[in-house]
Length: 269
Length: 91
View 1: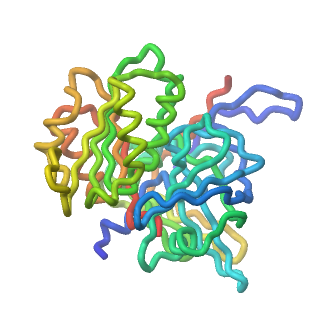
View 2 (view 1 turned 45 degrees about the vertical axis):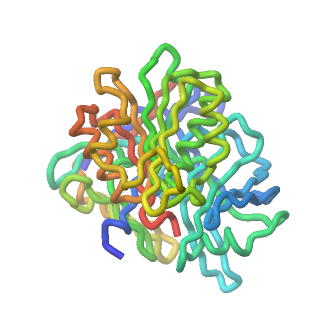
């Protein structure tokens, strides 16, 4: 095989910035400032990471836990906070039998510290500043805790005053398990260019007016922007949902390279 | 649990790859030796195991890169790819 890289690793006095250069990430300690219960199974951790530089909406961090006997477990968690926030927010779903998430959701207390490294990822990211002059609408599709990186994008979009037309199609089991429910209601009520469409797959409240089934091609055809509008799509959630959404959007005429996917697998564990 | 649910994106290997390469590797591009498809690492399939990870082609399932970290060494089996391009534009 062949490897090409066009980087010139200059002398120490060389101050050119090499885009794409990511010096080896160090493990850092983040101090838990606040723990927020989002739904019965999901908590947000607000962390003070003293040496945090900045990140892009959609990026993740690796979290490492180490037992006293040296055993390590490591998982990736999407960053929920926008780049503009001073503190880092991770939103963690408790996975039964998981190695890391039950510790983060059940054991961790305000004032504790956890090890993390990041930000990581250059593929599933959205930067409002890069999109200036590009009014392609955004179509965001989330399943369960797949909302987390998309929420970072929605928050970043709001903070940066970007008004690109945006729709979020969000699948949750039931009303009580809709993560960031109140914030999504608030931001979409105050922003006519942002529309949030829910589907509740397991149980719907009385008088529920929106969808009550799993996301399928017909639902995507109803809700997605027309391919002629050159939309940019991001979908995140369980592997099966993400793959079905990506296939269906392609079948509806979306350009494959404008459908960005992030699979959660068993949601990080 | 079905295998499909154990599958992650190459995205999730960004931290691990950064231990070996000083670049944002989720946007590096690799050509599959099995089917010839070129994709970003962020888009390929990742399977994690106790000692490391395997990146597989999203189209034909060829093992692109096998990474293990054992005994203080990283071992990379790159036989599944024919080409690797790492974006490193100088500004």
